[in-house]
Image (cartoon, rainbow, N blue to C red; front, side, top):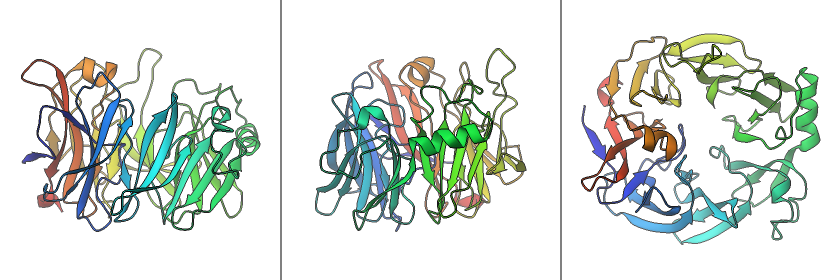
Length: 361
């Protein structure tokens, strides 16, 4: 299968988090990042047409390589991406038609928007850093309605700590500083990664039903979780036998909000995603001392139907934190991912690419 570079040059190109919205909802545009030097923070954000024409720079940010600027589409004209100001994360939501930055909020960005709602988390270091948004005055999880501008506090720091304790787990100093905040497709529940003393390797996965306030927690959670549907997750199950996290025993599965494994979805994985119909799944072999290949699976089969090989380069994968982060296109005909390589001058480089997988639909 042919692998196509989104943009070809002396620079590196990067896509965001696994399962991110690389394409606009109408499938006509792609968002990606360019870096002249992976060792530096200067990063340019570009948009192009899905046929790889009309490349245009829309903004410049400072960020690391892990998930790049987490750039993702919200609507056909609104995008969200991460920046850094005074060493604190900031996310911006921009109208790409006008170039206007509609929101700039100092907080920890989330995975993506659902139904025009974008969740984010605020911990102590962000307090008093958003004078334009006086409603952001407590630690916790907030939800921004990107069209109206209304910001709602979905869960306070005390709510998060009480949730952990009610499920017989012990908070640590980082518990309320949650990450990987994600709304379910109908935006009626929010999940988040939790640091707790009882789960030092994998952490815990929390969920709050926004209508009822009911909470759910999975100790020693599966990793790189995404919503499968409104009520269940899909994620990679990993195992640690006291020495290292195992690659060969990992697999993609579906889980209830309370951690019950419902079904196996695919094989070896770390970062994962699924197509819209939940018939195809993808995972990368992003583990130390292995080439971080990307695999394509049919639902329920641990044997890949396609393998996309990526050269092994421990420095780029782990020191520079460039991970494949596979993501499906809106129509499921493309599989996007980051592919590392060494450029002709011997410098480290990575390319944002896609594979045509329409033959498997």
